[in-house]
Length: 85
Image (cartoon, rainbow, N blue to C red; front, side, top):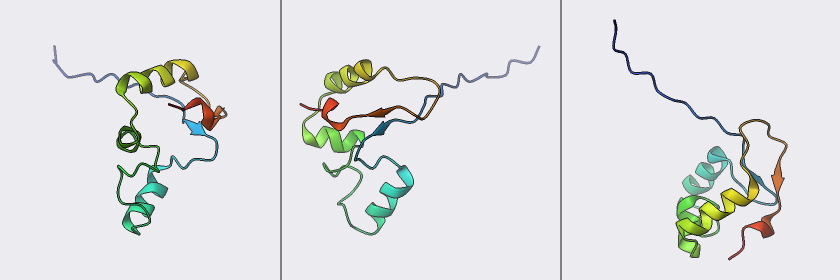
């Protein structure tokens, strides 16, 4: 018997928050063009950016629980006011 490692892969649908940029490729361009100060710029909705805004891990977990992250489909658009302190 071969004892090969079988990784578990979890795939989720894309998170779309109305009026906010969430594409890694587009954010990387903003970072490289020095439009923003880095991936931790508070204007971005990256985990590091949200942390610099004052969001705690508990708050982010609560947000994810409220929006009901799905495993399929890209048609879900979340209103930006859902992510408020």
